[in-house]
Length: 472
Image (cartoon, rainbow, N blue to C red; front, side, top):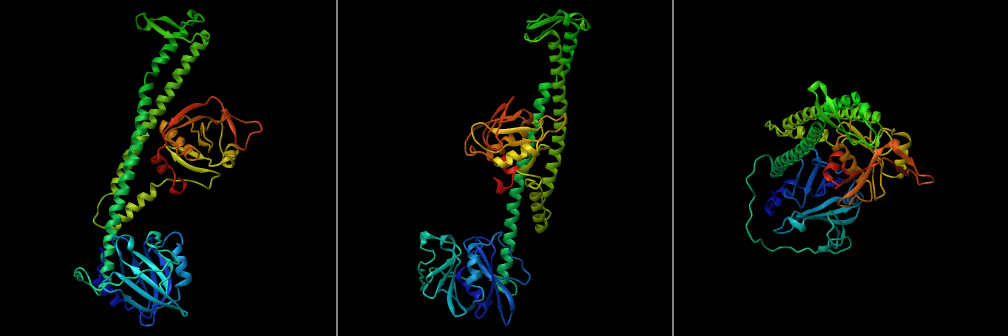
């Protein structure tokens, strides 16, 4: 909703800014500044200016209206507080047939000017000059237009307009109030649409992650569903162990419980008969444990999927109350943002699939984590060919680490390594108990044994889910 020069003229005539004193300057965003003013007639009031956006505008703010503040004190805001606060607006005028406004200021006999250009495109700016139009500072520095400090501002005044403009139909106590109300409504609608897109994207990402984990659990279930057959073979082999000869790679035994049919059982030639029997029982126990864990994990993930889908769909409902809908959308974005704990010790902490992940970001944190915060059964990951941080997945009793959790931890390890910009990175992983310190090595340096290899393509989407923006 861009203002034309006739509308700007009307707002200026309603605002009566001459004689007002600038008490405070607040940069509300990258493109907007709120001027807190005072005059004897009205007392304190606020004047809002925004440039270079689809809603570039100027107007008096209604009493009690809240304006945002940037998280950090901006450069222009610092300059304004030092050089503009305390100034009196001695003149407020509009350049002929133009969407440009000029304030003349008197700051304890120091004369300054502020040019407001409510244009679209690169011409938009707020520029502070001295009386000779030498630029002192700007909201937006634009070297390509010679709009930098110490440059002389070129001011061209128009003598006519290429087309005739009129003030749009409006209602309310003033045109300024109408513009404020209209922009607030448009901004609210834009914010709602933006939040809907963000929440929808977050939902799709969360459900995709859960679907991948569910498929991984189902693959594990399928791969280990015949664990009872391993126990059956182990029982047969145990009963016939006296027939096994060392060096055999298989044996055929009679299954009298099934009519005396022949059953062929593979053997490890390097093991004794008793060790072959025990190895088969071990395979059975491992397969059964993996199967049971995978079933439990799949059921948990399915329940989490349903709850997540319902929670997001509720947040996306259009109730007709736009402000309430906006609050609900913001709330779910806050609740589903990465939860990172940084007060429990060194490094960064996050979670994935019910497992806690701890990452050291430098040698000192790596060493401290190894000494005081991890135990033998915790999993350790590190990039193979690049120096970087150690990542640990905390052990959970009777729980196998799912592939998705391992990939999440691997991506964090790559993030805190010198290989973060590579398209493919090799890592290795093993339990902490299989690490040994390098003799006379650097701080935190360890040598892994019984390690396994893993190759990944770094996935920014995983990092965005796991870590806050300032850590990426």
